[in-house]
Image 1 (cartoon, rainbow, N blue to C red):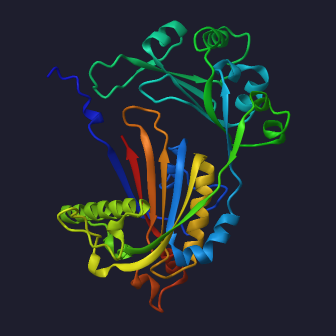
Image 2 (cartoon, helix red, strand yellow; image 1 turned 180 degrees about the vertical axis):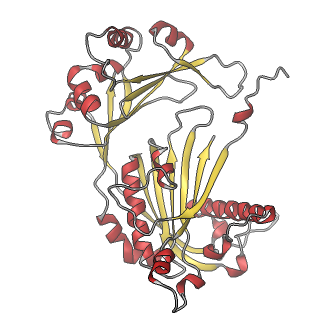
Image 3 (cartoon, rainbow, N blue to C red; image 1 turned 120 degrees about the vertical axis):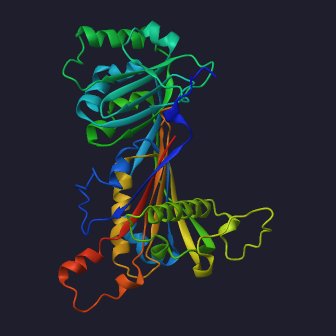
Length: 384
């Protein structure tokens, strides 16, 4: 009635990208500015990841994929904000090392803290913000009524001026010791572990962390109706009608993948639900094939670098298969840090080669053969 609504926050958004993987992807230097790798880097705080692929591909390729993945650990620890600025911890993990930290609490309700690339972000209520005396900006509330203003403070702790004895830094130390002095639970991940950061004498050890290793959980998904993925997505068209059909096809595939992830009976080959109770139908049911799938999932604080390794290893293995079953879907869910336009996660679907790609003409050159290896993919990024 009073026009307080935030027009940009109406509903959740999904940004869809359709492109092709490069013929060769360097694991040490992936193209971070292009999808889907840009989507992975834009979501640093992932709490769950899952890989869905046909059982045939899993049985022949999973051991090779797993061998390319580094061991990933994270820890749960209880410590106050002031501990981050103690000399040993500050110099070892923030000034020199590279860590990822996220505190307990719900964004928009509690005081929540996060640390990434040396930047400490504090989301505070109005009372705490005023008492701390730090400079920040108001946080968008999405036009919600009766919600008090909240503030976000971002502190780049890697700046040359961030040293003990400097006036601005001592002001932060004072706020952490006198206002933001409550011990909170954190998840802690060392992105560049060394003997100094992960050994027995590491600074984090004095806070008695509980170390957890990421481990996969395999689940069989039997008798799943799989649509012809390679023919479901038509070639890009400049016509409006073609773009609309492309959008609908992507939405149908996204919905189908979500139901597969849930192991819903609606995507089973033997499903016989009354249409009065459920009107859902698998895309292109007449062309679907009943197939056994495998879901490999991880839960915890999953770093972006590890997810990039998983994606590259899986793409390489699928490129060696020319069958229509050589597809996979990688879905990741993020811990929301923003009430409005928060980055909630993404899904990457690798599309298998079509029959035309599997039977190339004899006159094609070697360069066109490399072009065929550019497997198409769809990337959905969820914001809301």
